[in-house]
Length: 172
Image (cartoon, rainbow, N blue to C red):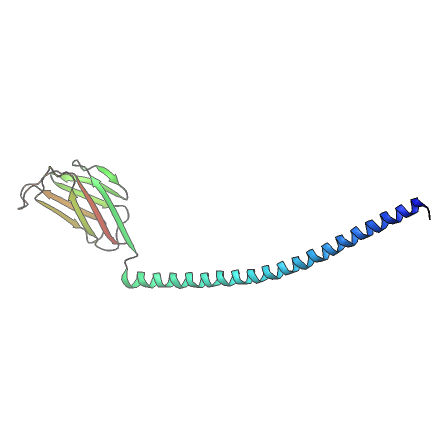
């Protein structure tokens, strides 16, 4: 055999050896991919189970909150608050309008009425301006509060004062 043919055979055997090694690597990678697929399938089923469990618990929590809301009603509250200037204009707050009815007399009308008569808290803003008596009367319809401010405790001397308020009650 001449040298040229021997070199060609060596190259052919080398190429076949490299192809065999590459084929072996491909089989190994295929086996690894199958293992990864099995593990991913297992992970997928566990993730799906967890999502299902979370969904069930979420539904359960929603039912519990609905039950609490029905039984106690405290999750179904509406809160409106704001500040009214002496002249009856709104200093801040939303979901209400305000007016001045006369000296020391104010009205606050809610954009969204309460389901029933709400509870109101009113306080004078400026500590230098005394108020002997503050009367806040929520309407039975839950759509407004009427506020009267007096400079004496006998409720005989009405006075214009800047005030803030918080009204809380059941949503309609």
